[in-house]
Amino acid sequence: MNTIQRLASEHREVLAVLRPRAVRDLRESLEPTARIVLGVLAEPGDGVLGRVVSAVGAVGAAELLLARCSAQKLVDVVGDAGEAISPKEAEDGLKRWTPRVDQMRFTRSIGQASRVGARFLFPGDAEWPAGLHDLERHAPLGLWVRGRIDVLAGGAPSIALVGARAATGYGEHVAGEASAGLSDRGFVVVSGGAYGIDGMAHRAALASDGTTVAFLAGGIDRFYPMGHESLLTRIASSNGAVVSEVPCGTAPTKWRFLERNRLIAAASDATVVLEAGLRSGSINTAGHASALGRPLGAVPGPVTSPASAGCHRLLREYDAVCVVDAAQMAELAIGAATPTLAGLGPGWGGVGETPDGMRVLDELSTRTPRELGEIVQRSGVVSSKVMSVLGELEADGVVVRRDGRWLRRRTAC
Image (cartoon, rainbow, N blue to C red; front, side, top):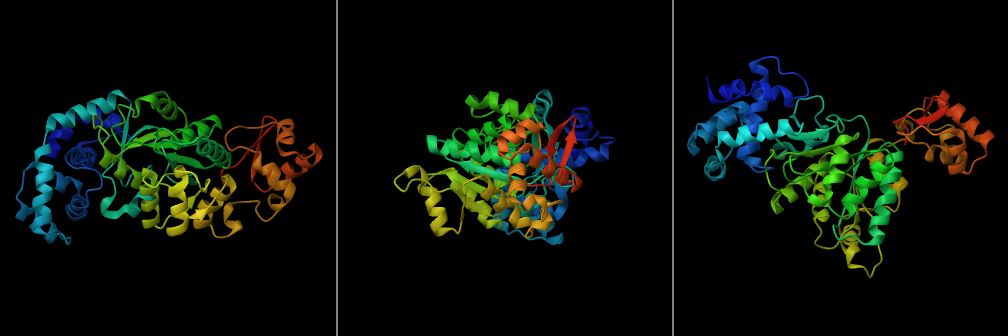
């Protein structure tokens, strides 16, 4: 029995708890075991390891590294499988990975993941975020998730709202309004769980009964920053998720924050930078979004404010689109995947495009059913017209009536 088989057999009960579906036999536990082992051995985004996994699979790669193979053998095995790494890449890679060969660390990590109720996803799972495939050899080996595991699996549009930790009142106000508006339009709000803009985006989504996802740079067994432990716990226990690619027990570092940013960009349909200085980490996220071909937006600020200098640079030098509210951000994200209004779902091109129809639609939530009186009050449209619009939208499948209240379907934006 090889090492991965032995580890999978020894920890089969724990692995069964960590997976979205029950692990029925030893064979089904080999792939997750190997990917967890590789996650312990390597730092996020290691492209050399990505090529090794592409060539020989996760199980084959893990066996080679656990056996402390030579650099030449690694080059030969990968070359025979149709990929290519140079002797220098193999040698440097083994110098990074071999010192981390520690089966006890693997055991501690999955034990802690089990204790906090985490799940482990990897490419091929139905719940895997499809956008991460665009990272190719730099894609994560797997994802650790606390909360809803399928939140980014493609059922709803998603948008990343990022910005400075040291946000101004202006930036936090814009972030709150944007996140709430996008949540009401059925978007999953993605961010990094940090202070400032990230935290406001998450809080506003929760307050609007929306769905939000926080990508962390450290293990999800210990939420970071500590000041956001309550917020991140609310996200994980609501309809959202807290996600990381690094194993439980891993501390957040500057490098891991930068690598984490590529996941935020790749998992989202678009990225919007709401407020950022010239050296803000959110500029790094914007760079990943641009490199991946994702739509990139930036919110302008006062020209005298250093806190908005990064946004202005994105607008001037990186072809970011100027966006100022939730409607424009939604258009930025949906426009990339859906070039015509007809693609936005039933009802578009009909009453949903009339002034009254748009006002009524804007005040409907995909999460919270609203009574007629509340819709009238929020939209400023008379009750008789609201009822007429709702009737047409219901016939078109854009809204649904539940116990005398109205809910907007996710397919409408």
